[in-house]
Amino acid sequence: MEEADCGFSRTEIKGLDGERKALVYDNYSKLITATETIRKMRVNMDPLTPTTSTLSPAIAHIADTAASLASALQERVRVPRIVENGGVAEDEERAEEKRRQRQTVRWVLDAPRRLRERVSRGEGEAVESDWSEVKALLDKWKGVEGAEEVRRECEKVLAGRADADNTHG
Image 1 (cartoon, rainbow, N blue to C red):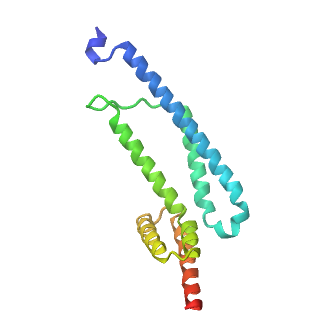
Image 2: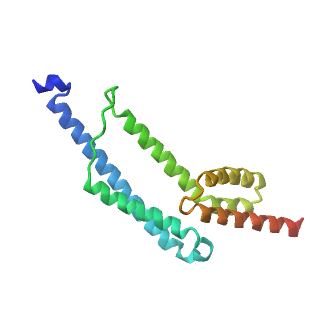
Image 3: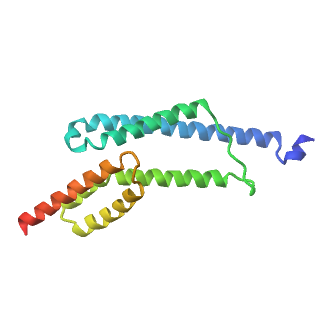
């Protein structure tokens, strides 16, 4: 009787529950791996401390956030929302958007290194293009923890490039 009312059989519900648990476990495993990777990166960055000291607070914040997310995920398992079309497309879209946002944050955090590399290779146009995109994002992120540190590191690289241009040209 109840199966006809909600549109799902017990077998389908058990299948969805099993898939949900597998997804949660998979995401939890990825989160643990990411946390470990961040910790290893912090250890490997110690020799570079003088040049990366302004990035340490941002990386620490990311590691702390990952650890708190891992513990929160462990404590709570969320059932996927079923949307009108009968799937979990809305959750998948949100997950994809979050993945793109994380990728953008990583890209911005890596900007000082990328700019330094491009400056050393004499890729002036690439430096300007990259800085233009990074600067636009940092402008949007005004007040976000770590954004000003990244901006200062990028500006140091650009100032060093300008100084080199003035001594050679």
